Amino acid sequence: MAMIVIESLVKRFGAFTAVDDVSFAVERGTVLGFLGPNGAGKSTTMKMLTGFLAPTAGRVRVCGFDVETRPLEARRRIGYLPEGAPTYPDMTPAGFLGFAAAARGLRGAAARTAIDRAVDLVELKPVLHQPIETLSKGFKRRVGLAQAILHDPDVLVLDEPTDGLDPNQKHQVRALIRSMATEKAIVISTHILEEVEAVCTRAIVIGHGRILADGEPTGHGWRLGPHMAAPGRLDDVFRSITLGAGAPAREVLPC
Ligand SMILES: Nc1ncnc2c1ncn2[C@@H]1O[C@H](COP(=O)(O)OP(=O)(O)O)[C@@H](O)[C@H]1O
Ligand SMILES: [Mg+2]
Image (tube, rainbow, N blue to C red):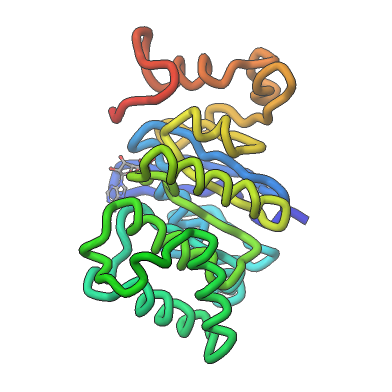
């Protein structure tokens, strides 16, 4: 059974269509890279996938539960790292994770075990008792990541998980994502092609709210769906989709 099933998802903001008829399913063991330039509709899709934003049309099921009609069952199975910084700047990571554990229904020893595990995995210990607003961007990101994996969910939705991290931290977070992959269905968004190649078992290229390519790595590059020339080169496809000639091959600039 697919752990995430998205069917004909649409989001309009007034007359503007941010997500335009997106459908896909994700199985356990997949790390799906949601790849597209800024403004492509990645975050909006992830907000609908996690139940934080109501779709204009379409539906999402997580582990068989409709995110809109069975929100508690669905959200229990989801860990979500939203875009940007965590929202409680005055709290310390210890306080914030305690709060997040309580919100997940974890108490006492179970909460402590879950927090210790998450803190170890994202290496947050040195800053546990320092207000979040005083942390570097990398540590702020890792606080969000610890919160997302706290309850060891089946489905992880990580919106630009390595944004703001230095190269060593990026490497570490990518290794962590890979290590969790066999147990879970993981969706990460990124505008960095190299990130998809480093951690993902599947890539969906999105532009202007639509899926433009969907593929998996093979021994000879990426196979990018029936309508693409195969075997496709992900960087060529991504470049031609997102920017014209002369664009950097490995990273797409904001549009
Ligand atoms: N609340 C909103 N109101 C109006 N437009 C929005 C809103 N949220 C997102 N958008 C627009 O939808 C498009 C997709 O945004 P987003 O999903 O954040 O893209 P991405 O995460 O791929 O950078 C952008 O053009 C953005 O400006
Ligand atoms: Mg975004």
